[in-house]
Length: 290
Image 1: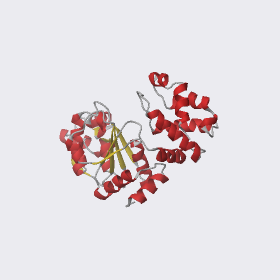
Image 2: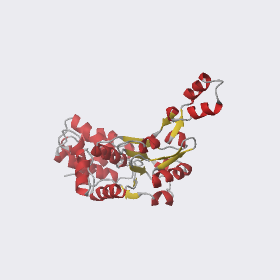
Image 3: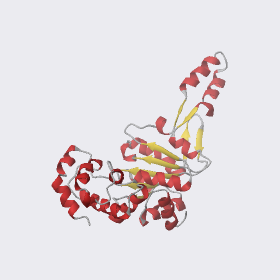
Image 4: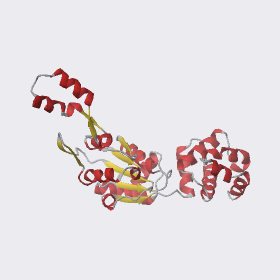
């Protein structure tokens, strides 16, 4: 996969419909062997990019889910303390230095996602998901990995990458990322898909969703997103709703206005939003759908 057309086709075969800008970003990511930072609202499909990329390359997806308080032991490595204690007890009375050399060896090392990603023989896709949820300190720790694809373990020294993984970072923009992190990455903003692309996504992912119904769903979802909602529905919610409508054997939204409104629970995830999108609002939005 070198050209953006080849990349778009490979992602589409994996169920992800990419626009030209995203395909170009992935092309440059592979050419330059640089991490790709995907930023955008929750639910626009950033995580799915990494999943589709792994499927397109027929390689492993290694995912690090970030959260507040994430530290090196959860992300990089830790020692198997139970086995170390058992080994110390079993070799009690022997030379202390020899025991120390033994228990701080590969045999007792537990790989976490970051270390695992750089030690694979075949380049995996490393997904660092929601990096904006992690602390500034963890973000700073990532810089060595993203710059040189190596990590330092005090007891073992510097471990350099066996292969360079395809690194995808995602951010929902809940906090500002550092300039140092941004400089190490290529950048792409993932927005909600337009109507035509969302209809193609529905057809690719939902069996039984025809072109006409998929286009109607995409147009109605576009209208709902323009309402003043607390939680704007993402692509995943659109797919859930489309699957529900197909399962209920709806072939045209205009033929089942009651079902359309009653199933909006697939899109609307707060009491406030459900109260705002009344039957009258649904009818108004449905009236704009061809």
